[in-house]
Structure formats: structure tokens, C-alpha cells
Image 1 (cartoon, rainbow, N blue to C red):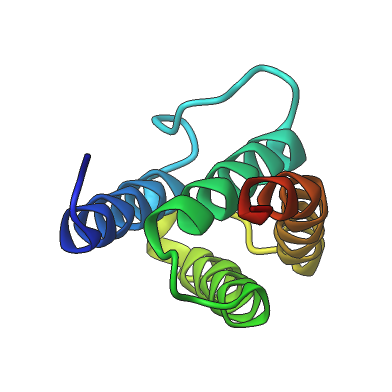
Image 2 (tube, rainbow, N blue to C red):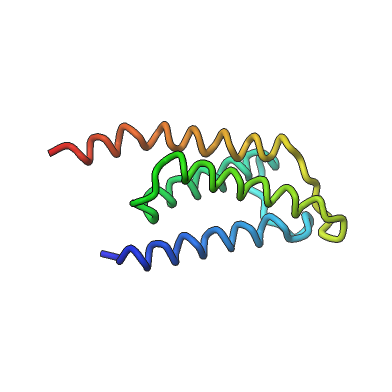
Length: 116
């Protein structure tokens, strides 16, 4: 079993990796093959589910707001012309929607696991 500290470090590494992938030039960035929004949704579904596991003491709202702010940071960074990326408020909306969906999906599972 991993310690709380190890889980937090792993989550931080995942955030940094996703940030790196999000700001690399678009022609070099990996693509799931289904479009940019699917890439955003997949990344934020993963981060949310991983975050619930890694940051056990963090409330759902705090995690959601932090990840949504991270999505906004990605879009602001992608607006830098030298990165050859396209910033879009719709990408941030897709990120935030994925966070909400992931939290809704995991909520009943967490309730079942807490039952005595």
C-alpha cells in the first residue's frame, strides 16, 4: 500500500506530464485519434479519478475547482503563439465537464466503500 505522500507525488507527476503534453507543439502532441475534445475529456477524467485516489483527504469541490483551474491554466498557456497551440474556452468547458462526470461516477462507489 502506498503512503499518502507517495500518492500525492504520483498525482503531481501526472499533472506535470499532462501539462507537458498539453503545451507541446500540436504536431508533436499525442492524439487519441478522436479529436481534441476527446483528448481533453480523457485527460481530465483520468486526473479526477486519480486525484480522488491520490488526494483522499481532499473534498470533491476542492478537487474539482483545482482541476478546473488547471484546465484554465492549460488554455492560457496554449494561447502563447510560440507554442503553436490553439487555446479554446470550449476545451476548458470540456475539461470541467469531464471533472463533473468523473465525480458523479465515482460518488456512489465511494459511498458503498464507506459503508460499515
